[in-house]
Length: 101
Image (cartoon, rainbow, N blue to C red; front, top):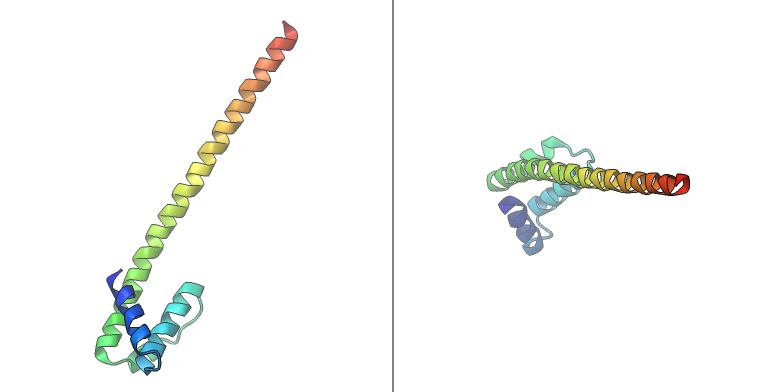
């Protein structure tokens, strides 16, 4: 998350700078999954271009971890549903046995 943090600090320090504006638009496009003209990256100075590439790299890695977290969350929900269904079935069997007895 170093590049993302560095970009945030840069944008906060120089909000009117054209490089800051481009980096900001890149981040907004990544977050909203909107299109971003890649040619705009070539307008950045060399250091900010490298920063933009690092942001892309970190963003991709973060998305991977976010996907894993969502998968884990869904898996937990499914396990809880299965547990609830088992408990409900157990109660139904117990009630049926009580009625026949």
